[in-house]
View 1: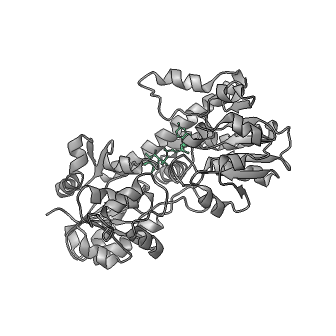
View 2: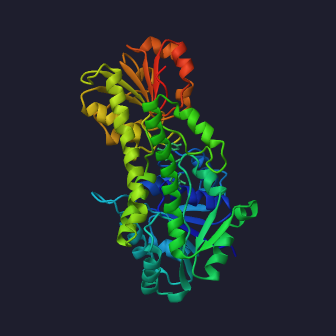
View 3: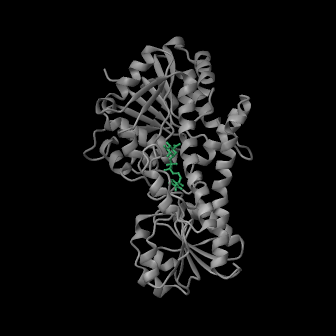
Length: 446
Ligand code: UGA
């Protein structure tokens, strides 16, 4: 019989994983400790914006018309322990307050709640991004706590999904990494991922520490790529070069590749920034801090982008921000998401506001989350409304809808036709032709 699956934690990762497992044909029980989330998901509603996820849930949540009924949600650990053969732990590991290290309390709580209830054979699979060494520690904890003893095993199976593409990345992963200690665990994971494996997803079997490291190494590499191109943008600005052309040209070299070479206001979100910091902190604990000192530079290049955007804005409005009207297009950390965690766009908007500018923000999906974090900013319901009377317009998250804006129409609404593209995603020609002063990061001014 096919293994029954549980998913603990129903954030971006867990909710998507649960729905995807049901799509792959398994009976799935998702758990969250927040009752409101469980209620929403049980009605087939997604607590966040993620393209395609609501449709996927709708196809499988029990009780929804025409659904397979394979997916249910609960707040009960005993129910989860009783139900599952394979338990995926998908809770988040945010940055610890005032420190670089990551906060393992949600992971620890999940293991401490589940393990004592495991009376029958089970494979617990960690998916959360954790400091290397956590899996070994958690395996020991499982052995101490689980009544079923050695019939309960741990595997580490990091997740590489991107927000905005979560469904696609989960159903068709570009690789599956399985940190295991036994053939049995490997076999069970191969069974769970039989469909993507049949489609050709590579399956990389490792030990625990390597599996944990693959995740942090991958995110560190991506962060490094972005900061590299942003460092080139700084040099381009000083030398009057064009970073967009530069990225295109170096990207033609297969060894470098074109992806993740978009210069702009840098990376944010719930993953890259905190992952590189947690990685540095962990390397320090292990006595390998020297190996990762370059990540400090990656981090500071990235954070400098936000300050640079604020300075460009100050220049654009004539040297003083006080009382100036600034329209900010985009609040989320990337398009096709409503996630504003450590968002460069919102950070820039906030800094401008704190320096006395009147900032109006519009984001297609992120207004509500942004409002919770920054209630003192003004929010508009459309780009056109946001730019009304603006002294300068900032493009800070590259939603498709912003690329489709009509420069003529917006030109009639603003006070000054001045646009700063913080994402290098708009067509300078188009805007300049409509009479706008257009400036982008790392590109020539005219
Ligand atoms: C990232 C990784 O890409 C995923 O593989 C990983 O699974 C995930 O973290 C995680 O650890 O869970 P995500 O946070 O969704 O995914 O976002 P990315 O697509 O990596 O973008 C991160 C940030 O980099 C965004 O703010 C984006 O605007 C910025 N970025 C990206 C650039 O500034 N330039 C680029 O060329 C690409």
